[in-house]
Image (cartoon, rainbow, N blue to C red; front, side, top):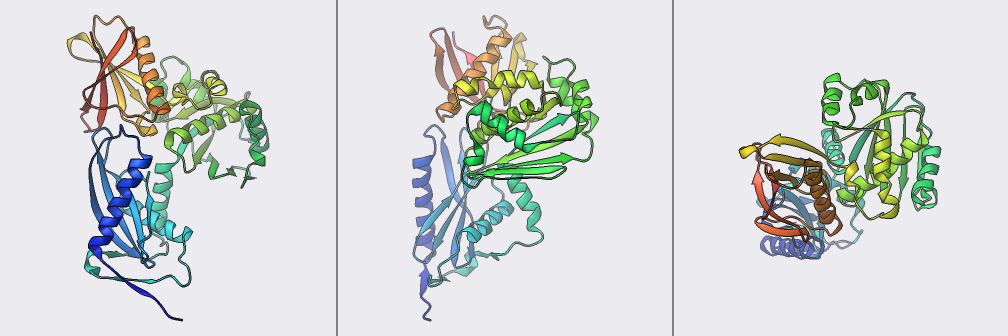
Length: 394
């Protein structure tokens, strides 16, 4: 058999990869997400293909983020995006997974490297050391919650039937549906969605529970109720969609799980916050009327802290999990909005951003209604994390 060989011109390949990535971002990325810098971080060669790992820096997002472009000997370029924060170990896992899922054809041209010193050679097989990186990658791209049960029994068939009743979707009829259940674990698969349920053998540390309960100011006995649920199941959901969509789907499944076990569930923990099961279900009802709306009442909580000049800063916790900057409303002493109304402003703003795939920008103004004119400025906290500071314009 004759093997074709094609010389790889490094300059041309890097330019092709960069232009392909820029075109992809222009088509798929929100215009309000402001890219300030794109640069090559590392070049790899693996399985007769070149892979270019790029750094993406944004003015209104915490970064740097990463994206990978593969280029083969025929100059076919493919983009791997939504990979999260820059991490070379995870990048290598993504490349190996891409090769496993996209094997070359038998007669594919051989790739000859013009300047091999510019590339890192990567083996296309997974090593024992990769297992930690695979777990880290899955953790960074999935969404997770913990449900506290009085009893350890879990009936997934009942949960799937309840999901159908609540949301009108019979997942058992969807493509690639599969369900398996053991004594302490189980999983549900459909389309590209995977849901894993695992019983945690060890009890959750008291300090963690007390810290989570202290944030639940509207649920005074949160700690006691969580302690009653001595059987804790971890629920993890992953698919190819954006994190906001993953989180919304997780909310639907958590509701099905709690309704199917209404007399057994004592508490729910998401993002280190304890939710009252009944309040959680009540907040999720809007999904039945507005299925495309992100249920922020189940995905965010708020902290309050004194600021200068007797002001009060109310800050979201959870927007970063939805691939947005956290927001803070600076409520001045003479502000006509109450703290609860200020929280509602942040919720409405968050819903608007997610529904319209928008990002807040520095030094911009916007109106929620005729009487609410707001100013947004980007700031950094003590940990150098960016956030959006919202103030009332007079």
